[in-house]
Figure 1 (spheres, helix red, strand yellow):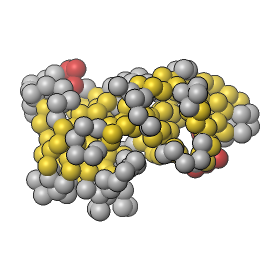
Figure 2 (figure 1 turned 120 degrees about the vertical axis):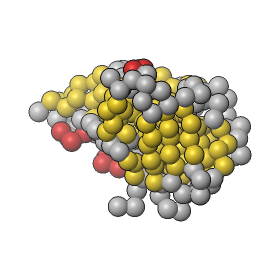
Figure 3 (figure 1 turned 90 degrees about the horizontal axis):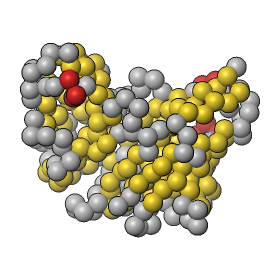
Figure 4 (figure 1 turned 135 degrees about the horizontal axis):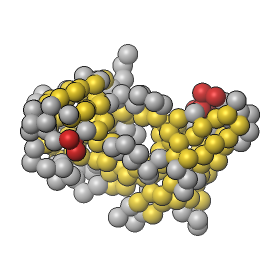
Length: 114
Length: 117
């Protein structure tokens, strides 16, 4: 499968714990995006990378959220001191970085904070 | 600022009858518009995309959408619904973003399509 992959697919954690999610983009894609989708809503943009550079992070929901893409390939999204309100689906997408590009989405990581 | 309004949160059709999912957008630019579909516990799959070429766009699985600038609409249609079409559908607008030539996607809230046998 040469699509976007995410790991884990499901995560259950207790409030206050830290969690980390991984995204592997399509191999030739240089842009990588993170989104959050809550129940009954469309995905909302969190952050994005051009290669290893994080070019937009003002939309991250709080300073408990951080993302990295150290070698310009896979990316991780970390949530520290999780809260019940963090329960959501976290989606990753990648693109070629062209004009009027298409973003291709992974299957998502569903987080449940107890 | 861009926004997307999906006019129906839930649409129910009988198998074999036409599907119409409505979407209106607002944008400061000449936008790209997309429809994505999300099946339960699956990721988002691109159905079709409009990027200022032909106003009638054909997508996968028999879906198509027509861009109407005067009405700021991008409604999704299919002549005959199939049981496998039952899913959630998202209308999306894309505009240039301030950072490094990237594009920002704004999603509608989604329309859940049910297909009755």
